[in-house]
Amino acid sequence: MPKRVVFTPDALNEPFGQQMYERLSGLDLPIEVLKNNRLTGLRGADDRETYRIAKNTLAIVNAPPSAFRLQPIPPSANWQMNLAEGCPAHCQYCYLAGSLAGPPVVRAYANLPAMLANTASYERHSNVGIGERRGEPTSFEVSCYTDVIGIEHLTGSLAECVRYFSERDEAQLRFVTKYNQVDSLLPLEHGGHTRARVSLNAEPIARRLEGGTASVEARLQALRRLALPKQLGGGGYPVGIIIAPIMPIPNWREHYTHLLDRIADALDFGPGIHPADVNVEFISHRFTPGSKAVLQSWYPNTPLDMDEGDRAAKRNKFGGVKYVYLPDEMKALKTFFYDEWTRRFPQAPILYWT
Ligand code: SF4
Image 1: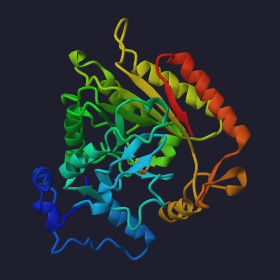
Image 2 (image 1 turned 180 degrees about the vertical axis):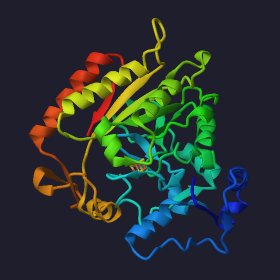
Image 3 (image 1 turned 60 degrees about the vertical axis):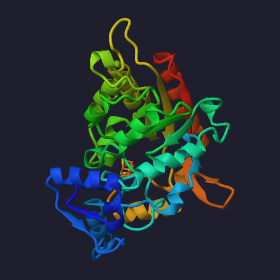
Image 4 (image 1 turned 135 degrees about the horizontal axis):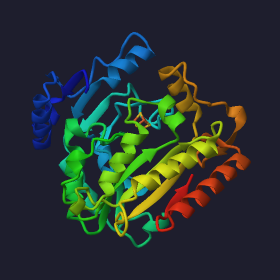
């Protein structure tokens, strides 16, 4: 629950903004309507205080016009569409660090229905070449800049997306979460057009680095309920697992073996009952100079290893650099995950390793 909720006047003029207002009022949260459409009062005396204020603030705003020009997001999906930016959790490796400018406040978009309608013009314009998606429906990823379940009880935005895409035959919605409050999603008619993914990691990483998220066990149970057929009380969703960020911590083989065994248990529905559709994505840990600087200001005492000396530098075509594991380490990790996954889940494709 945020400590502060603010609406911009434009957001409150949107019918979906009104719905959010009613939902938030029903939760007894104090709501402030700003005088104009600029968010102010988010900065504290120092970086730590700014972080604290921002993470406890939910702002309902209209997405700017630039949000209607969708960007490709390989290898995860064809296009990214952000229903919100900012996340209430405290992962010490957070992917948002260095990507989003300014204090990490959660901004949820009141003009979501217009954003959804806008995706229609991107259908059948897949950036062909993304693994399994050749010839498949165009995929839209809504989790690039937020945790969609982490804020769903406040906004209802994900349910709105699921409902919209249930009627789009040429499109697929994809989301991922580290939270477990999936009850509101289970009864929705999704038509198999939403892939519900859960982000998982080895216990020591989740416990030490993923503050404010659901436990690994709670996420596994959420995965189970999302995948369980509707006639058995589940959501009957196509599901996905993202194991990320993979790190070669001490005894990593043991920890990740345990995790894979637990995933197998969570998706075991008994003889003759199978999840509709499962796949997996593997993402190894990486950082950039920019994300490292932001993370160190947010989490000055982090135990996260971000020593460039132990990493390989990978340059992109624009001259940016990111630090990934050394080739031998990367190869050992990748071989382990491919072997162990395929052995346990021969019917569940690996979408990519990165
Ligand atoms: S759940 Fe994702 S977006 Fe949220 S803090 Fe963790 S890494 Fe960042």
